[in-house]
Image (tube, rainbow, N blue to C red; front, top):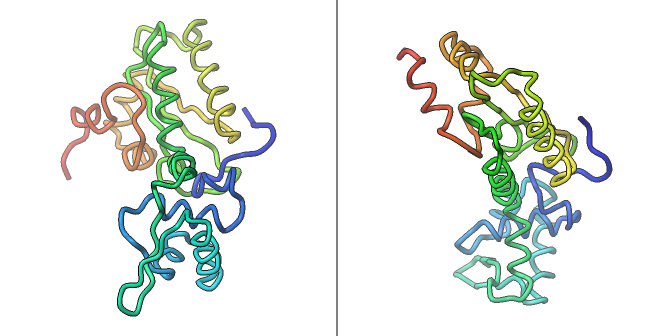
Length: 217
């Protein structure tokens, strides 16, 4: 399934709304509980130049959204969380949590609940590009066949929800609990994607399911 229109940058979700350098800068500040120097903000943002980031910080400081503390020979910047706009910045900076919450709520209402559901890949790592897929591992109960109409409808709606919520293509890796056990027993390479990191949506984590099948090295 492919998306239509704009997609979400999985590394800097805030850029969906704030496409300039301001977006990554605000995202860094929203995620930090301490003051950061211009160089630290630049390093964590992973984009732009040090000079460009400092210009953004200075401009945001003039709006009151960012506060500046003069500490010794350094200027430390932090988000003014009392500012009227700050809640919107924090929301945009934490879109992954919002996505996982929405998907968890949807799966929680399924008539046929899965054994496990989690996000993995770029969305879980917090990297990727604008056109990166959002990958989801979905484990169905053994008694549910792949062609079960209700199950397929649930999975199809979930895939569409991912596209609607993010604009990114959605990819669901679906298998039964027994098939998952086979993957775990054989310790196939894809387990590296499923096990770390991942964002749990429903059921016990894969690591818990894996503990019964993976042998110690």
